[in-house]
Amino acid sequence: MRDVNVDSIKQALKDRIGELCARLLPDGRQQGRFWVAHNPVTGDAIDHPKDPTFKVPLDGDAGAWVDYRSGDKGDVIRLIEYTQRLDFRQAMDWAREFLGLRAMTARQRVDFRAEQEARRAEAARAAEAKALEKRKAVLRLWDGAGSILDDTPAAALGRRYFSEGRGTPLDQIENLDRVTFRVHPALEWWRGATWERRGGRLCKVALGPKFPAIVSGFRSPTGVVTAVHCTFLDPVEPRKAPVKEAKLMFGEAAGSVIAVSCGPTGLAHDAASEPGPLVLCEGTEDGTTLALGIPEARVWAAGSLLHMGKAPVWLPCVSAVFVAADNDWKSRTAQRQLDQVLADIASHGKPVEVMRSAIGKDFNDGMTE
Image 1 (tube, rainbow, N blue to C red):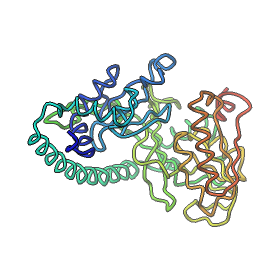
Image 2 (image 1 turned 180 degrees about the horizontal axis):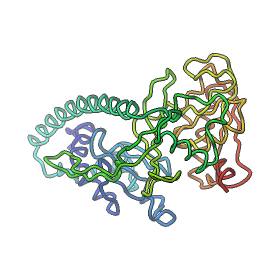
Image 3 (image 1 turned 180 degrees about the vertical axis):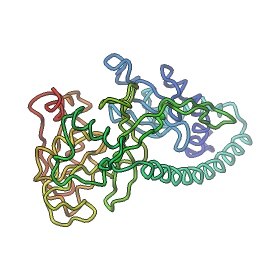
Protein backbone atom coordinates (compact mmCIF):
# COMPACT_ATOMS: atom_id res chain seq x y z
CA MET A 1 0.00 0.00 0.00
CA ARG A 2 2.88 2.38 0.75
CA ASP A 3 4.21 2.11 -2.82
CA VAL A 4 1.86 4.96 -3.76
CA ASN A 5 3.53 8.15 -2.52
CA VAL A 6 2.00 11.30 -1.08
CA ASP A 7 2.32 13.34 -4.27
CA SER A 8 0.48 10.71 -6.28
CA ILE A 9 -2.33 10.62 -3.73
CA LYS A 10 -2.55 14.41 -3.71
CA GLN A 11 -2.86 14.50 -7.48
CA ALA A 12 -5.55 11.82 -7.46
CA LEU A 13 -7.52 13.79 -4.86
CA LYS A 14 -7.21 16.94 -6.97
CA ASP A 15 -8.54 15.03 -9.97
CA ARG A 16 -11.66 14.23 -7.93
CA ILE A 17 -11.85 17.50 -6.03
CA GLY A 18 -15.55 18.10 -6.69
CA GLU A 19 -16.50 14.70 -5.31
CA LEU A 20 -14.11 15.19 -2.39
CA CYS A 21 -15.62 18.56 -1.46
CA ALA A 22 -19.13 17.14 -1.61
CA ARG A 23 -18.03 14.43 0.83
CA LEU A 24 -16.12 16.68 3.25
CA LEU A 25 -18.23 19.85 3.00
CA PRO A 26 -21.75 18.60 2.24
CA ASP A 27 -23.43 21.91 3.15
CA GLY A 28 -21.43 23.74 0.47
CA ARG A 29 -21.99 24.28 -3.22
CA GLN A 30 -20.06 25.22 -6.31
CA GLN A 31 -19.76 28.94 -7.03
CA GLY A 32 -17.77 29.55 -10.18
CA ARG A 33 -14.41 27.83 -9.79
CA PHE A 34 -14.79 27.37 -6.02
CA TRP A 35 -16.60 25.06 -3.65
CA VAL A 36 -17.94 27.43 -0.99
CA ALA A 37 -19.13 26.26 2.42
CA HIS A 38 -19.33 27.14 6.07
CA ASN A 39 -16.52 25.95 8.31
CA PRO A 40 -17.51 22.60 9.86
CA VAL A 41 -14.93 23.03 12.62
CA THR A 42 -15.65 26.57 13.85
CA GLY A 43 -19.40 26.25 13.28
CA ASP A 44 -19.59 29.74 11.79
CA ALA A 45 -22.94 28.92 10.15
CA ILE A 46 -24.58 29.84 13.46
CA ASP A 47 -23.34 33.44 13.51
CA HIS A 48 -22.96 33.90 9.75
CA PRO A 49 -25.67 31.74 8.14
CA LYS A 50 -25.66 33.66 4.85
CA ASP A 51 -21.93 34.33 4.54
CA PRO A 52 -19.84 31.17 4.04
CA THR A 53 -16.13 31.94 3.68
CA PHE A 54 -14.59 28.46 3.45
CA LYS A 55 -13.44 28.23 -0.17
CA VAL A 56 -11.81 25.39 -2.08
CA PRO A 57 -10.62 25.95 -5.67
CA LEU A 58 -11.83 23.29 -8.08
CA ASP A 59 -9.17 23.97 -10.68
CA GLY A 60 -5.67 25.43 -10.78
CA ASP A 61 -4.18 24.52 -7.40
CA ALA A 62 -7.24 22.42 -6.66
CA GLY A 63 -7.84 21.74 -3.00
CA ALA A 64 -5.67 24.62 -1.72
CA TRP A 65 -8.42 25.81 0.61
CA VAL A 66 -8.70 28.86 2.84
CA ASP A 67 -11.28 30.05 5.33
CA TYR A 68 -11.23 33.83 4.99
CA ARG A 69 -12.97 34.25 8.33
CA SER A 70 -10.84 32.03 10.55
CA GLY A 71 -7.61 32.30 8.58
CA ASP A 72 -7.20 28.52 8.48
CA LYS A 73 -5.85 27.14 5.22
CA GLY A 74 -3.98 24.23 3.72
CA ASP A 75 -3.57 21.82 0.83
CA VAL A 76 -5.85 18.98 -0.21
CA ILE A 77 -4.46 16.57 2.41
CA ARG A 78 -4.81 19.20 5.10
CA LEU A 79 -8.44 19.60 3.95
CA ILE A 80 -9.07 16.02 5.02
CA GLU A 81 -7.13 16.44 8.27
CA TYR A 82 -8.98 19.62 9.17
CA THR A 83 -12.55 18.65 8.33
CA GLN A 84 -12.30 15.09 9.67
CA ARG A 85 -10.20 15.99 12.76
CA LEU A 86 -7.44 13.57 11.77
CA ASP A 87 -3.66 13.63 11.95
CA PHE A 88 -1.61 13.32 8.78
CA ARG A 89 -1.29 9.54 8.87
CA GLN A 90 -5.00 9.08 9.49
CA ALA A 91 -5.81 11.52 6.68
CA MET A 92 -3.64 9.53 4.28
CA ASP A 93 -5.45 6.33 5.26
CA TRP A 94 -8.77 8.12 4.68
CA ALA A 95 -7.55 9.28 1.26
CA ARG A 96 -6.46 5.77 0.26
CA GLU A 97 -9.88 4.46 1.19
CA PHE A 98 -11.60 7.26 -0.73
CA LEU A 99 -9.49 6.59 -3.83
CA GLY A 100 -9.99 2.83 -3.69
CA LEU A 101 -6.28 2.08 -3.33
CA ARG A 102 -6.90 -0.65 -0.78
CA ALA A 103 -8.74 -2.70 -3.40
CA MET A 104 -5.97 -2.38 -6.01
CA THR A 105 -3.39 -5.02 -6.82
CA ALA A 106 0.32 -4.19 -6.58
CA ARG A 107 0.47 -3.84 -10.38
CA GLN A 108 -2.50 -1.51 -10.40
CA ARG A 109 -0.89 0.66 -7.74
CA VAL A 110 2.31 0.95 -9.76
CA ASP A 111 0.29 2.01 -12.80
CA PHE A 112 -1.72 4.40 -10.62
CA ARG A 113 1.47 6.07 -9.37
CA ALA A 114 2.90 6.47 -12.87
CA GLU A 115 -0.36 7.94 -14.14
CA GLN A 116 -0.61 10.41 -11.26
CA GLU A 117 3.00 11.56 -11.65
CA ALA A 118 2.35 12.30 -15.32
CA ARG A 119 -0.85 14.15 -14.45
CA ARG A 120 0.96 16.12 -11.73
CA ALA A 121 3.61 17.30 -14.19
CA GLU A 122 0.92 18.34 -16.64
CA ALA A 123 -1.02 20.08 -13.87
CA ALA A 124 2.09 22.08 -12.90
CA ARG A 125 2.52 23.25 -16.50
CA ALA A 126 -1.17 24.15 -16.71
CA ALA A 127 -1.03 26.05 -13.40
CA GLU A 128 1.92 28.11 -14.59
CA ALA A 129 0.12 28.97 -17.82
CA LYS A 130 -3.04 29.83 -15.90
CA ALA A 131 -1.15 32.11 -13.49
CA LEU A 132 0.30 33.98 -16.45
CA GLU A 133 -3.13 34.32 -18.04
CA LYS A 134 -4.53 35.57 -14.73
CA ARG A 135 -1.88 38.28 -14.56
CA LYS A 136 -2.79 39.30 -18.10
CA ALA A 137 -6.50 39.35 -17.18
CA VAL A 138 -5.80 41.63 -14.20
CA LEU A 139 -4.00 44.08 -16.47
CA ARG A 140 -6.78 43.93 -19.06
CA LEU A 141 -9.32 44.82 -16.39
CA TRP A 142 -7.06 47.58 -15.06
CA ASP A 143 -6.37 48.99 -18.51
CA GLY A 144 -10.10 48.95 -19.30
CA ALA A 145 -10.79 51.41 -16.47
CA GLY A 146 -10.12 55.15 -16.53
CA SER A 147 -8.83 57.40 -13.77
CA ILE A 148 -11.39 58.38 -11.16
CA LEU A 149 -10.10 61.94 -11.65
CA ASP A 150 -11.16 62.03 -15.32
CA ASP A 151 -14.01 64.19 -16.59
CA THR A 152 -16.36 61.31 -17.41
CA PRO A 153 -19.78 60.28 -16.06
CA ALA A 154 -18.35 57.07 -14.61
CA ALA A 155 -15.52 58.91 -12.86
CA ALA A 156 -17.97 61.48 -11.48
CA LEU A 157 -20.11 58.66 -10.04
CA GLY A 158 -17.01 57.13 -8.45
CA ARG A 159 -16.07 60.43 -6.83
CA ARG A 160 -19.65 60.86 -5.60
CA TYR A 161 -19.49 57.42 -4.00
CA PHE A 162 -16.51 58.50 -1.92
CA SER A 163 -17.76 62.03 -1.13
CA GLU A 164 -21.51 61.44 -0.66
CA GLY A 165 -21.65 57.73 0.06
CA ARG A 166 -18.61 57.42 2.33
CA GLY A 167 -17.99 61.02 3.45
CA THR A 168 -14.43 61.05 2.09
CA PRO A 169 -14.11 63.46 -0.88
CA LEU A 170 -10.98 62.54 -2.80
CA ASP A 171 -10.25 66.14 -3.76
CA GLN A 172 -9.68 66.93 -0.09
CA ILE A 173 -7.04 64.24 0.43
CA GLU A 174 -3.58 65.75 0.52
CA ASN A 175 -1.05 63.78 -1.51
CA LEU A 176 -3.68 61.42 -2.90
CA ASP A 177 -2.03 58.65 -4.90
CA ARG A 178 -3.44 59.63 -8.27
CA VAL A 179 -2.70 56.24 -9.84
CA THR A 180 -4.62 54.01 -7.43
CA PHE A 181 -8.29 54.66 -8.12
CA ARG A 182 -9.89 53.99 -11.47
CA VAL A 183 -13.49 53.55 -12.62
CA HIS A 184 -14.93 51.12 -15.15
CA PRO A 185 -18.21 52.30 -16.72
CA ALA A 186 -19.70 48.80 -17.11
CA LEU A 187 -17.81 45.96 -15.45
CA GLU A 188 -19.18 42.46 -15.24
CA TRP A 189 -20.15 41.44 -11.71
CA TRP A 190 -18.60 38.03 -12.19
CA ARG A 191 -20.20 36.49 -9.13
CA GLY A 192 -23.43 36.54 -11.13
CA ALA A 193 -22.02 34.52 -14.02
CA THR A 194 -23.35 31.04 -14.80
CA TRP A 195 -20.84 28.20 -14.98
CA GLU A 196 -21.13 24.61 -16.10
CA ARG A 197 -18.68 21.73 -16.02
CA ARG A 198 -18.17 20.41 -19.54
CA GLY A 199 -15.72 17.68 -20.40
CA GLY A 200 -14.13 17.97 -16.98
CA ARG A 201 -13.63 21.73 -17.27
CA LEU A 202 -15.56 24.67 -15.86
CA CYS A 203 -16.99 26.85 -18.61
CA LYS A 204 -18.73 30.21 -18.28
CA VAL A 205 -22.00 29.93 -20.18
CA ALA A 206 -23.54 33.30 -19.24
CA LEU A 207 -22.05 36.59 -18.11
CA GLY A 208 -23.02 38.28 -14.88
CA PRO A 209 -24.77 41.69 -14.90
CA LYS A 210 -22.70 44.80 -15.52
CA PHE A 211 -22.35 47.82 -13.23
CA PRO A 212 -20.09 50.84 -12.93
CA ALA A 213 -17.22 49.94 -10.62
CA ILE A 214 -14.41 51.62 -8.74
CA VAL A 215 -11.29 49.65 -9.59
CA SER A 216 -8.53 50.06 -7.00
CA GLY A 217 -5.12 48.77 -7.98
CA PHE A 218 -2.96 46.63 -5.72
CA ARG A 219 0.61 47.60 -6.53
CA SER A 220 3.70 45.59 -5.70
CA PRO A 221 6.80 47.07 -4.04
CA THR A 222 8.05 47.88 -7.54
CA GLY A 223 4.77 49.48 -8.62
CA VAL A 224 3.37 46.63 -10.73
CA VAL A 225 -0.41 46.11 -10.56
CA THR A 226 -0.87 42.52 -9.37
CA ALA A 227 -4.55 42.58 -8.36
CA VAL A 228 -7.62 44.79 -8.32
CA HIS A 229 -10.32 45.52 -5.77
CA CYS A 230 -13.65 46.29 -7.43
CA THR A 231 -16.50 48.12 -5.71
CA PHE A 232 -19.59 47.73 -7.90
CA LEU A 233 -21.86 50.78 -7.86
CA ASP A 234 -25.51 51.53 -8.43
CA PRO A 235 -25.71 52.98 -11.97
CA VAL A 236 -27.42 56.17 -10.75
CA GLU A 237 -26.94 56.76 -7.03
CA PRO A 238 -23.61 57.00 -5.13
CA ARG A 239 -24.03 53.69 -3.34
CA LYS A 240 -23.03 50.09 -3.79
CA ALA A 241 -24.73 47.98 -6.47
CA PRO A 242 -27.78 45.95 -5.35
CA VAL A 243 -25.94 42.61 -5.29
CA LYS A 244 -24.94 40.30 -2.46
CA GLU A 245 -21.20 40.91 -2.74
CA ALA A 246 -20.63 44.38 -4.15
CA LYS A 247 -16.91 44.24 -3.40
CA LEU A 248 -14.74 41.68 -5.17
CA MET A 249 -11.01 41.13 -5.56
CA PHE A 250 -9.21 39.60 -8.50
CA GLY A 251 -5.54 38.70 -8.83
CA GLU A 252 -2.69 38.13 -6.40
CA ALA A 253 -3.07 40.75 -3.66
CA ALA A 254 -0.77 39.33 -0.97
CA GLY A 255 2.39 41.42 -0.75
CA SER A 256 0.86 44.30 -2.71
CA VAL A 257 -1.15 47.27 -1.39
CA ILE A 258 -3.76 49.81 -2.39
CA ALA A 259 -1.80 53.04 -1.95
CA VAL A 260 -4.34 55.67 -0.88
CA SER A 261 -2.00 58.56 -0.10
CA CYS A 262 1.72 59.18 -0.50
CA GLY A 263 2.35 61.20 2.66
CA PRO A 264 4.31 64.48 2.72
CA THR A 265 6.84 63.37 0.09
CA GLY A 266 4.12 63.06 -2.54
CA LEU A 267 5.99 60.08 -4.01
CA ALA A 268 4.57 56.60 -4.52
CA HIS A 269 6.10 53.81 -2.45
CA ASP A 270 8.04 52.41 -5.41
CA ALA A 271 9.80 55.77 -5.90
CA ALA A 272 10.11 57.15 -2.35
CA SER A 273 13.18 56.70 -0.16
CA GLU A 274 12.62 59.24 2.62
CA PRO A 275 11.22 57.39 5.66
CA GLY A 276 7.91 58.41 7.19
CA PRO A 277 5.00 56.98 9.16
CA LEU A 278 2.61 54.52 7.53
CA VAL A 279 -1.03 53.91 8.44
CA LEU A 280 -2.04 50.41 7.36
CA CYS A 281 -5.73 49.51 7.18
CA GLU A 282 -7.99 46.89 5.63
CA GLY A 283 -10.28 48.66 3.13
CA THR A 284 -10.38 51.71 0.90
CA GLU A 285 -13.15 53.47 2.83
CA ASP A 286 -11.07 53.38 6.00
CA GLY A 287 -8.06 54.29 3.90
CA THR A 288 -9.60 57.46 2.49
CA THR A 289 -10.93 58.38 5.95
CA LEU A 290 -7.49 58.04 7.51
CA ALA A 291 -5.78 59.84 4.63
CA LEU A 292 -8.12 62.80 5.17
CA GLY A 293 -7.41 62.91 8.88
CA ILE A 294 -3.69 62.12 8.90
CA PRO A 295 -2.03 63.87 5.94
CA GLU A 296 1.33 63.49 7.69
CA ALA A 297 1.33 59.75 7.01
CA ARG A 298 1.38 57.47 4.02
CA VAL A 299 -1.81 55.35 3.94
CA TRP A 300 -2.15 51.85 2.50
CA ALA A 301 -5.11 49.48 2.38
CA ALA A 302 -4.26 45.77 2.31
CA GLY A 303 -7.69 44.49 1.25
CA SER A 304 -8.07 42.05 4.14
CA LEU A 305 -6.81 41.43 7.65
CA LEU A 306 -4.88 38.39 6.45
CA HIS A 307 -3.02 40.46 3.85
CA MET A 308 -2.04 43.24 6.25
CA GLY A 309 0.84 41.16 7.55
CA LYS A 310 2.15 40.76 3.99
CA ALA A 311 2.34 44.51 3.26
CA PRO A 312 5.85 45.62 2.18
CA VAL A 313 6.57 47.63 5.33
CA TRP A 314 10.26 46.86 4.80
CA LEU A 315 10.42 49.54 2.10
CA PRO A 316 12.68 52.53 2.93
CA CYS A 317 9.72 54.94 2.80
CA VAL A 318 8.29 53.37 5.98
CA SER A 319 9.70 54.42 9.36
CA ALA A 320 6.90 53.18 11.63
CA VAL A 321 3.58 51.40 11.15
CA PHE A 322 0.22 52.26 12.70
CA VAL A 323 -2.22 49.39 12.20
CA ALA A 324 -5.82 50.63 11.95
CA ALA A 325 -7.82 47.84 13.57
CA ASP A 326 -11.58 47.42 13.28
CA ASN A 327 -13.54 47.44 16.52
CA ASP A 328 -15.43 44.31 15.49
CA TRP A 329 -12.25 42.20 15.42
CA LYS A 330 -13.17 40.79 18.83
CA SER A 331 -13.45 37.08 18.18
CA ARG A 332 -10.58 34.81 19.19
CA THR A 333 -9.94 34.08 15.53
CA ALA A 334 -9.74 37.75 14.54
CA GLN A 335 -7.54 38.58 17.53
CA ARG A 336 -5.23 35.71 16.65
CA GLN A 337 -4.98 36.99 13.09
CA LEU A 338 -4.29 40.54 14.29
CA ASP A 339 -1.58 39.27 16.63
CA GLN A 340 0.02 37.46 13.70
CA VAL A 341 -0.16 40.62 11.57
CA LEU A 342 1.58 42.63 14.29
CA ALA A 343 4.26 39.96 14.66
CA ASP A 344 4.85 39.85 10.91
CA ILE A 345 5.23 43.63 10.76
CA ALA A 346 7.48 43.76 13.83
CA SER A 347 9.76 41.14 12.25
CA HIS A 348 10.96 43.83 9.83
CA GLY A 349 12.36 45.89 12.68
CA LYS A 350 9.91 48.78 12.35
CA PRO A 351 7.98 50.18 15.35
CA VAL A 352 4.32 49.12 15.21
CA GLU A 353 1.26 50.32 17.12
CA VAL A 354 -2.47 49.62 16.94
CA MET A 355 -5.01 52.42 16.52
CA ARG A 356 -8.80 52.11 16.75
CA SER A 357 -11.73 54.38 16.01
CA ALA A 358 -13.47 55.91 19.03
CA ILE A 359 -16.88 55.19 17.49
CA GLY A 360 -18.43 52.60 15.19
CA LYS A 361 -16.87 49.42 13.94
CA ASP A 362 -14.20 51.17 11.85
CA PHE A 363 -12.81 54.60 11.05
CA ASN A 364 -15.19 55.30 8.17
CA ASP A 365 -18.22 54.81 10.42
CA GLY A 366 -17.48 58.19 11.95
CA MET A 367 -17.84 59.81 8.53
CA THR A 368 -21.15 58.18 7.64
CA GLU A 369 -23.05 58.00 10.94
